[in-house]
Image (cartoon, rainbow, N blue to C red; front, top):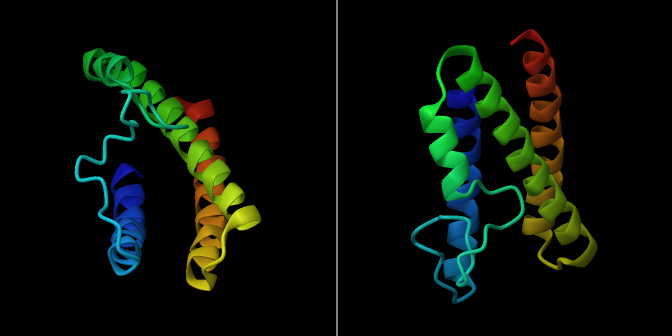
Length: 117
């Protein structure tokens, strides 16, 4: 599932990067999910979260990964919903709708997996 998520999100990242460049903005090269003050954006894992995941093993690692990915996806859905309410670019609005649909389906799938771990 992790590979499927990565493969699904890369085209979205590429598209958004292309739009930023076309609109005269440079994308954040570090993709850290943190603002200039070091605070994590909604749904982004912080250094402590990453360290906890790296230290986990077996079912604990699987459970923790799924829990963190659910939070990450919920953050993406929230941002996409905010964009739908305030955005102007038809192409970006369409992508927001797609993100909401796809990532909500993945949240449902991960919640089912979480019950089995």
